[in-house]
Length: 391
Ligand code: GLA
Image (tube, rainbow, N blue to C red; front, side):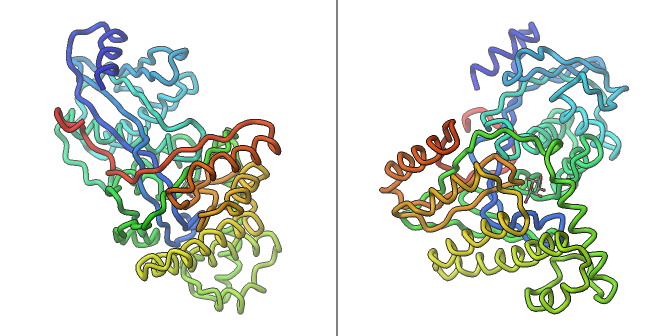
């Protein structure tokens, strides 16, 4: 934090001491591509995330700087013009957040100087963009003394993705980041936004994040296409069923009515959405019963479904996850997040982690031609102001 403050003072040429904020990234344990299908997800916020340090200004100017993109330099705009501007690059995320928070009636009467630093690897599928949105939300709330309901802030973050950036993503990432709790995952019903915290007690196991190092952006991925295919499948099913979303169906109901879905590809996509939602609820049950093996099997089944029915894995994620499955002490592994590259997770016995990483590294590097990266996930609290002494 001291480095960030020093950098802030250099970049903005000031002696003022900024206030400090943090929003985590997230992993999703299970429940992938179910959020926009009205199903359940089971994510957790992690200790990697985005720091922001900021000072309120006396005029209406906003200045943004990211230590992750120093080549872009300081991006400047005015509170009176917060329209999307491709030249503003990454700063469109905070700009979108400020715009929507103001439109909600919150009084942001002055500009600010804000410096960001994120230690979430970019494009790794650990929600660096939702993390920037949420750290900006918390910063505005505190700097300008506004009471912003957390669920409202989460929805505004999603709105930035959907309407400002143009990615039709669901609510999971912003929710996990806004509501995260140390050592807990969140079971969220994405239709009602009812949620429960579940303690993550994995006995002598740790969650390892494995990065394929294959970059992808959702804007350039097939994400929106998958969403449309599910919407088409739902529209077909609704001709005879009175349901609101694919998340309303059991596996049996889906099997009975899947003939209604005209296109075979749409049928496969819907099958994933339905079975994944069922798996997510089962997984929580297994965890609560202390059945880690059963929990791991559902995690593996999720990957199979994402590979074969949803087709969002790709050679890099498959190689990584299949290498992980073969290792000693692994109870489960799957891609996490949107897919198409990015990260996977594996639940690994703590005293086997070194061998696990060496072996998976070798298999992946030999077959893909570049290296994966490993991190141990620690599940941490959601977005907040960092107060002096609690850094
Ligand atoms: C991305 C989206 C989320 C969710 C996941 C897939 O992370 O932002 O809303 O759809 O992909 O589960």
